[in-house]
View (cartoon, rainbow, N blue to C red):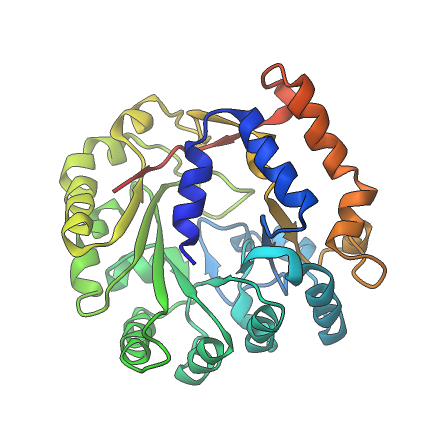
Length: 343
């Protein structure tokens, strides 16, 4: 399944009414249209300086873990209705001992696209092989530097040598019959201290085709050890550091998601995503679940499935009401997000 093609098509539809109509039809027909963003555990093995896990208070307050029984119940209740299963959203999924089992549950319940997002430090050849055999479609690697000094300074607790070993592992897996279809994505959060590493992307991943590279300007997400949210240096070095990578991705056949220079110029210096107002209509296909305290108040998989949740929360009524009475976005029906260009 070309999940990126579907998402691109959805985002290109300008009419909120048309989006709502399509979602309502899919909902009524019980066809898959939702993407589950799933954290099996709220913990991380690193203390990346741009992440809230670098804050001792956040580490104390952010915790939780789904039991094997919880995972089985969640899979039965949600997975049969999901178009995509994204494992790892606000935490590190590889600290979960049941990660390969979760991937296998995704395949068992027919999820068309299964992806994990990870810093990669705990990925072993055996774990990658097990997940690929279980139905994994994509691995997204979070990296904040492509040189040892930058990588280890921003990703505290990580080893750049281990990162390079992981690239070798992924290259080997891709060479196997079962791993040929595995997609590799890299997320790079760019700030004033690591923008100079971006041109090293081509050398670091030489010999391993990267399917998608996302260049994400730094944003403030909670309290973190890193506090330089200025984008002035990013703007001034855009043509030197970002544009050559965009061009190289085009030549290598790598899809590149990147901010336009004009967007960065108009951005605030406080890390706020500045430019695009997205309707909650665009958030309807997304469902997020993590093992925080009281998570069963959102959905209790022991008592209801996805459509039971939708019935209880009047999702179809919400769709139809907005389909008929939609009069434009209100302050309560908007979220901010960076509008990425794609090459």
